[in-house]
Length: 487
Image (tube, rainbow, N blue to C red; front, side, top):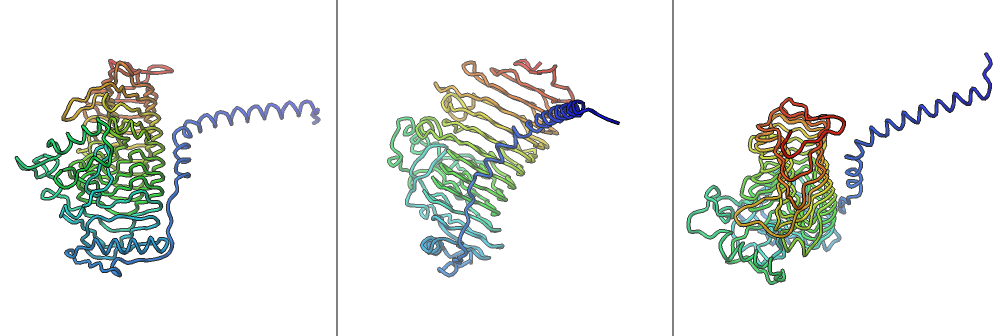
């Protein structure tokens, strides 16, 4: 059979058109995934994970004794200094129980704990002096040293299979929170006494220089556990943290941070698992968070301090983590005055009768700030107490929280999320009339049980795509939305 050249050319053109249409369809389908995963992968690819020379500095070579009683602060610092001076390597903590005061890391040092190593932190508060430049609830100050601290260092790590035990407890740091639950007794000093938080709040409001915000001895503000402050290329891998005085991991003003395979099992007051603050390019993966407060809380300064520093926390990826007890699985706020953007949460499991919310955003008109471009994908939620998604711009605790800084929240996306029990609400949003919450989308979300489907105030209508709550489809046509009445 003979076919003319024109006929064959026409067939080729038709084939090309068909393939082009097919490719366009596949590209559109892929683009929905790329919108969630592509930028996250690009962030991960750009994060610098520190590597270290193959040099070993056992702390025992510098006088450390793992008997649980000998104070090894000086031995740890000698090993760290020797490692740093030699150009870097591993400072190794072998099997044993090593008591120490604060550990101050230096550039190019990997503090590596072997299996069976337990680092116990001193319960003598004098060991955490002199004061250092640190932060408390989003406000910079001079205070007791964090238990593990690095200031303006590059290429640092805490790795291995060991345990870091802060020994905070009801007879040490915890009572300073002022709660009987954590050992506080009537008449004892606590953080809300006039010389503590009220004084720091006034200094923040008045713009007192940080070097003049001196606390420490005679004051009662607890230190963080691990705090890289203004550092670059930070790795925390494999270790366990327990019995923290305050926030557990607090990378502040730091860039290129990797937290991998870490277990946080700490149920003290304000025992957030990981709080990136003014932090950029952060990768949190393969971790277990079993905490007394938020599992992960992304922050960016409180009130005037946040606006002064003005460094948004951005480009943060959380994946393959398990969230157990805590106030929230992944939280943004409440210290958020410089803003948060570009947050990706994927492939996580959140499940505990003591976990309050899965995804939470909290701020108010003293904090202000913004949250934008949050993508949550492929999350399995067993049960939470209050809501799968909670956005609250009226957050308040202890004192009046109203001011003139209207928060802005936009472009929050939940996709491929399954929830067995969402507690009181499926979705709970409280925005502001002055700046309504914008562009909230739930796609391929199934919430089996919720006390109420949703409560939404001062928000653009929520957009639902292939989503059901309590067995009811939330879709309502080609561009389904739900308004403030939840109907």
